[in-house]
Image (tube, rainbow, N blue to C red; front, side, top):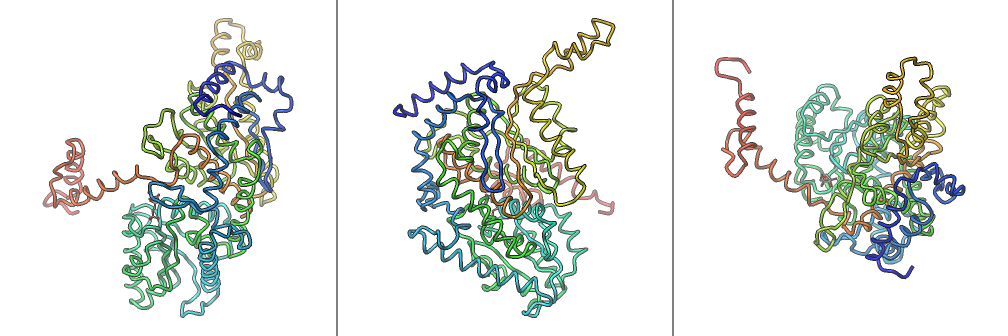
Length: 548
Ligand code: F6P
């Protein structure tokens, strides 16, 4: 392992060229033991990467490269609280949020204490709001409206939806978008006397959250009066003064910190809605599952380290095999929100084109992450995955033991999951397709159909299996992808913890609002956007004489 990372690039290109056109089936023949080094288990989570187009030689080259890039010191810096988010001059301490107090590194004691104190406040709030009736002058809480967007919604909503079957608390409703439809529906259908509103916003400056929050605050005030409304408003934020200015009493504001990025914040007080839905045991289970993966990431040798493996294989597909997108398909309706959560995690983190030092990157960075629940997805876009011209690596996610006893359904679900990975890899050559058409008398038609019914195969996938969908297993799954994202960023040479790319659109939206309202002409906007704004204005305002 003495060569330089630059030299590695040539070596990796050599391996990619050597393996081009080698069928995956042949790799299994040449390397009967590949499952042993390409599959692994952490607690309730099994990860099988054997259907990936690497052999032992390419794999060793990838491992050597990430080692020479400095993964071990980078990982120590991340977990030790170094300011790894250089552009914002902050550490990224999401793993500390789930570290048991007796395992907190001495250098991070102060942050560990702040985290423990906040967890105790979450605990107190959960017992207060889940008790009937509450001790603090609130009647029983039937509904929690959680207002937040991006990282302040995707993770908490995913956890609430995934674990809804184990929840015994109030109903939790998530309001993210500034689209007023859902908000109007919430105001029309919920009872303000038995609802609480939680605004989750690290910055407390996000337009969507503040607009929705104001409407809900006014809804509470109109129904209950200012004082009673105040007791039903909570905030989770790193900007406590802004929350107080909004009208939320300081003792109803739970902290977030600059040392945790929004898309990594599920484990913080941003997870309050999850704790309210599941209770503290469930929330602590989520943290414990993630902590198990944190220990694995910290201690396992690189060759056995599952987040490292996922990152290396994703990078191999993206950079060396030119695959521009990556599909994720959970075979469990409870995980329907997972692809959206992963999109933000990977694409907001690694969708960058300059290095951490500000130089243009020389290799592609993040692929497009997309996907949806299987088996439904099979009946939507799997045609393209099997026979389209682009090769799209897939992560299949399944849950081995269901929480119901319709075992026939569950076996069918898992059979579909396993079948898709197998079919993508094996494909069907033209001769086999022809053989299946032996009953077709017309040779021209047989040839036509053989062309349509053959499959190229050699399409890679990972298979991730959770024993059951428990808080621990979900926590483990999410932490696995968080660490994968960090390692992927190192491979790209970028900072995964900032997100400057979202700012330009936000500032233009702020500029466009008064243009749409009709008060400003839109000087400085391009001609296309100005014309569209004019169209909206004209159609929004009813023509004179007609009712609106
Ligand atoms: O989309 C940009 C972003 O800043 C995300 O990174 C973040 O998760 C989201 O907006 C919400 O931000 P906040 O929690 O500050 O409201």
